Image 1: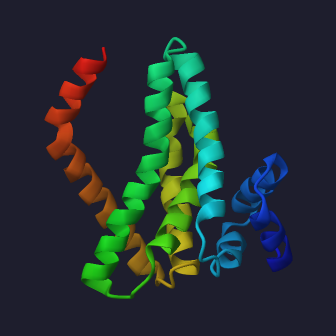
Image 2 (image 1 turned 30 degrees about the vertical axis):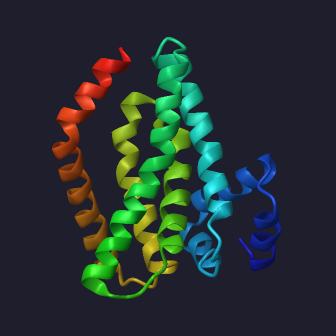
Length: 184
């Protein structure tokens, strides 16, 4: 994606702009993340994530949750919050261990684009786990191109973020079970 095209799409994220971004991410993630490295505003990335999350939750709700609006809403909220949470964990680890001073917006941009691109295919239950390594690879590329990480730093950061996230959910599991019981 050229710099001019990135600026044109950044002014408005319509359906055409959405598919241009999606196509650019999938065709050449290195070039795409290089082109968004100067973005300071995460609005475009957030809009891209939101459109992907709407699609993901709508399809999931329609095919797998008996058209339950409540489950669709939960999936939508989860789809929007997980990139935000993982970006926050990565931001915290960057501040604690690497002290690179990368802004939170940069991490969110990386996670929003990577997650949004994968959501389009990962709604299929049997393919979700297959595409998770692809999402990690996109995040790795984004950390290198947008946040200035070295490849090994990006890989270790992704692994550490996953460990922190799994530990967090393991600790919150009893609470999440109680919430699920209230909703059913």
